[in-house]
Image (cartoon, rainbow, N blue to C red):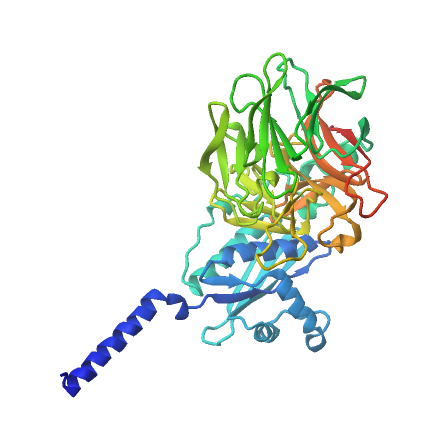
Length: 543
């Protein structure tokens, strides 16, 4: 039998071990992530620099976020709180320390970051403060002035570095952003006739004002790609319906059908790519196809064998996309579907006999789809960044570490292609859809050595108010360039009725000058009609 003092001693040991277990096994109970609210900076300028407010927010969001340690409140939540506080703080909230504390108290955060950017003439200054809501630390202030808009990124880097070190005891590397003064950067994304701003002006000086129609097609063109399939120096334009691959040749300013390849009616083709991945001299056609129920993949690969088009492999469970790697040239990427088209892992693909198998895993952010992934120099001319359109239609720029360096607020992409998500076991409601986004392309339109980004924008009927049913009224292609702080539009095509399902850039007519080629799906006359009555393939002459 234990003596009383031994019982007490044993009890203390048990308590101590229990506390040790709680501390060591469940550290999250002892150390919750710090919450930070970044209030959109006020912009003081005689010019319209509204894009800078979004750019500054996105930069600070990415630089301060630290999973499990620092959570930065999303922009939508902050905007909603500011709207609610308009009556008490005024329609135009004055960003000072006192009001920052009021905003922080309403949001229940640990820190509030606020500030302003002033731009006048060639001068730019950044004035900011970081408020500790507990009052334990004095407000961290920052002020810096420069003579160049290109110095905004280094200013933000310095300030965010101070915050991370002095507030969160964390050092961050900013080598990626060191070369922030971009050659030919357009301030605010505005067209300018001054060649010092890159010589990239309006649409009429880069792409012909009017497009040419080369094909009128009865039905819906889901996808399109361009390439020299037969290795004879003549470019073919390939289009796809649900279950057909249509190969066209250019003649007399028209696209003439050269070969029709019919496949099982169980296919729902959503994407095409052309690239010689097996290096045999004949480019393959990579066809991404959903099954008839849109709940799984049955992709396949075609190739010209000298006399006809043969299937190299089929029933592949991958979303395919061929992109330009700055070092390797054309490469093939593949994404497993998982239970959601934006959640599967993305790999580089390699040839194994007649198959294409996964090779190296890419580090990408969550909500990334291989179908809208491209690689090229964005933030720095000497680095290859990835650009994608996420599940919510936002442009992302991220490095090969998977860390998002910039995210836009404007919606891009938009297609009628969707993947049906699995129902919950107890859910008998309408099956949810995950809509897929189109490709992005890098192309140096102004010949300054740094390519621009071409992105589709299809406008939904009633602004997307019909939820799961997407219907589009018009679409255009926007051309964007990094302006030192964000991706900003420098040109765009005029809107076309209906929606643009795909596009490519190539010399389709053999005149030595590239065209911007697009497949346009006609607007349905009936709201619930799922298939278009007609489609067109058009082109803009690049200048």
